[in-house]
Image (cartoon, rainbow over all chains, first blue to last red; front, side, top):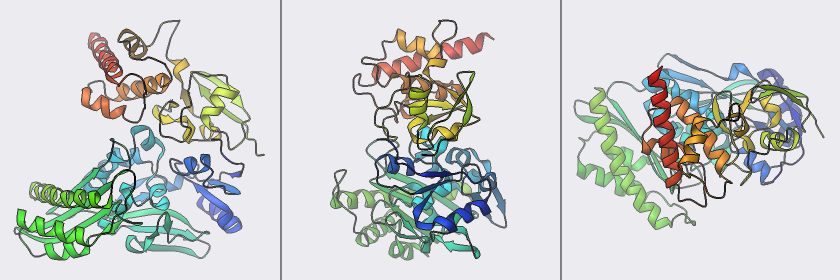
Length: 290
Length: 162
């Protein structure tokens, strides 16, 4: 369980990091918080020739709010976002999900950008990014480009980031008035990856649902929006019957995996329960915030 | 092999070394600094036995490189006792017979110390959650929780006296 040998680079600026990425591309891995990459190295599932450690790049860390969105630097550690009043106020869904990531010691090192670049489909932040249509900002040799979350997650641990690009920041739309949220997951133990997780955001206006967002973690190789259920909800007044219909529709649209933690059938039952519970909580939360 | 010269503070003392870049902080503490109190169980971030305190926060020392700790302040289990007297968390866990085989002990204690420093008013449920990333295969955890609760009570009493 020792890490393989690699060349170690610790750039101090984004442009130094980009030079290294341009030089080494697929032969390199970017080390952010290390809470996923270092286990992969220890298990010899990853063996890059060059490790580019971006922990020394101060410009990649920080939380700022402007023009209806909150921008979080890729190297902002999860505990920092968890403690941020800006995140708690403006992006309550993200604030609800952060405490469920791993354990306290993991969030001490783990980063917002690292989790999204690693793109584990059972992780919390990818589901939140999909639910909120967050924007991922990457920089490469030809400049900056903005990738919507819907296009970021391409497959299991695979993103739209090119080998010569660096994820630099993530922009999260701020929750407007009348928006309520919920993040729920069922895991074997507190801190484990979710068997099923669900990010829910609902906006109410005059008692009717004007916007509904449901994104699952752990049911496919990418975080998955329940588009059919969302469509069904918009324009309706919240009720137990409506939430039952949404749960049936959402579960009908997913094809979750079976593994030693739970069968596909069990995951579907959990998913249905989470949709009902998530919608109830999000609607209650929206009414409180109105 | 890439070796990197580093200087860091460990348990209040300045330490230097030239670990290979691939060496984890846990292996550096144990092999290079002979601080074998930090235990390694799973070596991939699951068991919590290697937990140390880095710049005031609990971290898994198997999930970071030694070179990344350059310039930081690290506290290990060896740094908790002063003048031969156990720290308050250590003493409370000793008094509660918290542990059996002792393998998970350093990680449990360091996680508890870091958690109680920020949450001296924690209740049992919060303590259970805080320790949920640390695995013990002997005790069934009840004696560990008892120890941390006792420590929390003593720390609160001591803070109240000030």
